[in-house]
Length: 293
Image (cartoon, rainbow, N blue to C red; front, side, top):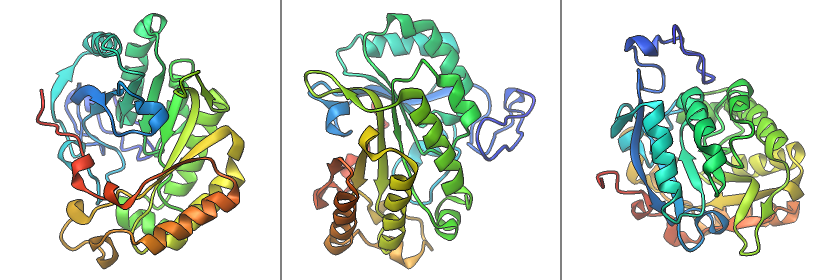
């Protein structure tokens, strides 16, 4: 690549020449972990787990990232496209319910090519698990290759998005991304065992002290997407363990029961179907062990 324009940062880094982009990655495809994961939403994890491939690097870079160990640059093993395709097949054949590609935005073109070579052989759905900070043009590379989109919608407030992710344009970018995802996969579909086979689950992580922004997120989603077509995952797992020194004071605690209940009540009033988390989810124990081989 002469100048990378894959993500909305459009940093123009010559990654193919060894220059690191805004994602922290230069050349190569870095995978931090590939294994069954049991802590996704029920119709994704099921009994056998979701076949997650955690990619290193990230083009958004939230200050409270739980996967900070791998999201700030090259980590894990470097793969070629051919090796990545083989990894996809091997993981898919291990008995997992789906192939779950986590934070692969900055590798979209290469992942799409790898997927295209193995998609006819896959007997399970492919999940694209992302921050939604990606362009419709990049997502179009995945059309026909991804069955389930598992995107975040993090913020409405430009000030909050800038403070936490350095991306004041987050809401506008993520809205366009979600509309493209919905265009590709349509309404949620499930098999006889309740496992998702196609569609979207939109995640929203509540941040402490940001209840009103969370409520604005839900109202925005309800006005943007057909509620009946998607599922909402309202997440309570924020923990201050990963907040950096000097982080805004409100990020140095967990979400209160009052905050979470109020947002959950609004979700119900708006007509969302989906998934809730209890307070026990707010622990660093939910973060995968990336030291495992």
